[in-house]
Image 1 (cartoon, one colour):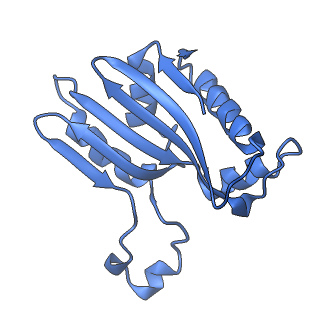
Image 2 (image 1 turned 90 degrees about the vertical axis):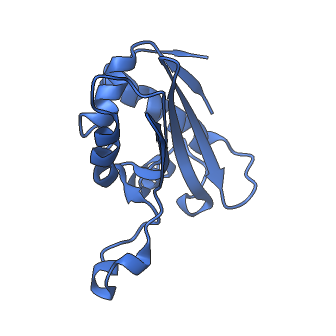
Length: 164
């Protein structure tokens, strides 16, 4: 687990809300506080879909790509939000790629989540990574590879950060 203090709020907000940079991530939850607080549960409600549509859905959470326009719509305007919280999970393909790395000693089926929490409040953005497993694991290699992936992602998006 690492904590990253983003130095330029505008860069991460643009990447998060106005680009496709995070679209492959899965959304566990989001909370946007403007004139009200809007909570979004990212869990897919299977009862909404037909049996045929469900055949194409192989995940528990909605992709950020589908929810991003809603969050952006809640925020856009002249005033900045009071706060924004987004909890992402790495998509299955990314989790499999990380656990398939020769440096990783953890099997993909033991990883419940590789998470990225992004929180904007009081003009600052703090990002915290995390990992969850289906059982107790001493090996922290998957977590370390996930942390390195997030650092590289931010570097690639020109999101300047300080590790706390």
